[in-house]
Image 1 (cartoon, rainbow, N blue to C red):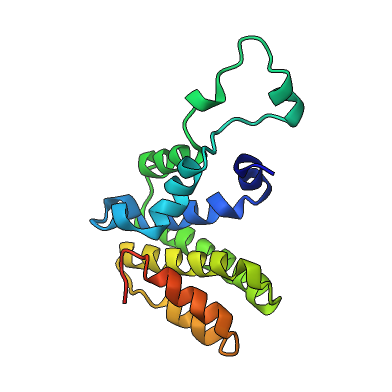
Image 2 (image 1 turned 30 degrees about the vertical axis):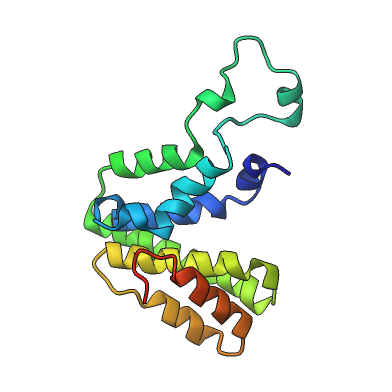
Length: 173
């Protein structure tokens, strides 16, 4: 499966970072450029050549005449970042988006960590750190990582991934 197909099959890969960024107005913060949240929203899509074009495998094999070159289109992360930046939202609406992200990430962590899907612990740790960064961008504290760690006290493999990912954050310990 290609990176493009994977991002469409697992919308959480782009939807959750979008909610965190939109909910915190992260792009306004001085540390946005160095943040894991930005990398999750923009970097992964661009790094793997994941371009926005909804097509089926057959469409790739037999493109329609006059269809745009998928490589010429912006990445999904770029489109979502532009949407977040261009959308006029109140502080209350942003907090609602951030709370939605917090709830969905909590559910995702429960599925991954409670389910002992150790191959996904790195992804769960990335979501935790991205949400913690978003909280800082919104004027709060970087406490979600501590909360995630305390929620799963007996999952040392998850703790190791969390510490490893936290070191890549714009707000390392």
